[in-house]
Image 1 (cartoon, rainbow, N blue to C red):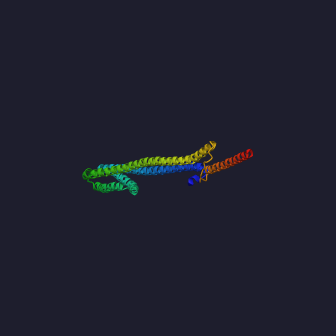
Image 2 (image 1 turned 90 degrees about the horizontal axis):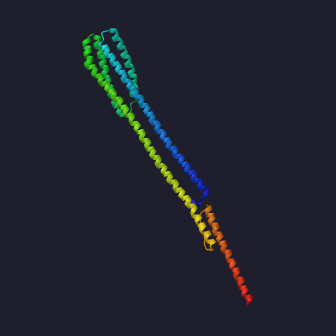
Image 3 (image 1 turned 90 degrees about the vertical axis):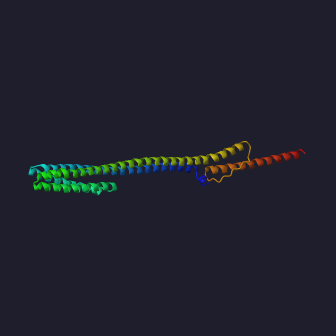
Length: 282
């Protein structure tokens, strides 16, 4: 076998270094994948948290603007009404900027669907706001109050509800991202455990191969030496291994052959001496 042709030192160093490198690569891969996943999840959560904060600010600004519109509608002070109107325009301008950012960042289908409801409700509220100021400008306080209570207020309620639903949609999306991140961590942990078990199994198999490649030739050598010690010189070892153990077995086989030759020569010498002694005696 090709494995038996590798020097023992290379086998041992190769197995040790191979397992060490495999463990380092596996650890680096698992850590890099875990860090990348965690970083992506954190970025996504931070991004959606920022959008939630923007949506909450949007709702707060909406409530402030609505309060001022209602205040301007019922006040009899023209100067105060103008101040309310100017402040409402300023708030609406700020809301427009916040809205642009929210609209640009909404990518998920459920977010877009919820945001469309908010924008539709906002258009209705803006139109009702303009109508309220129009009635206020006409000087009809009763009609202005009636319109604000009967028409404007329900539209505002619908608008705020749509904003609450949009915030809830974002929060749900955030929770989904967190749950997915947790699930990925679990999957990566399971994958890491399985990979470690596979690596351990490979290490055990390699250790078994190493032990077997060492113990088998040693056992053969010990059996041959024991046989020689017991006087059995007929043992022959055939090995095609090219490592140190193969060299040892071939050397042992050569030694056994030489011993057989020596013993054979000694026997022949003894036989010759015996024959000569017999002839002399006769």
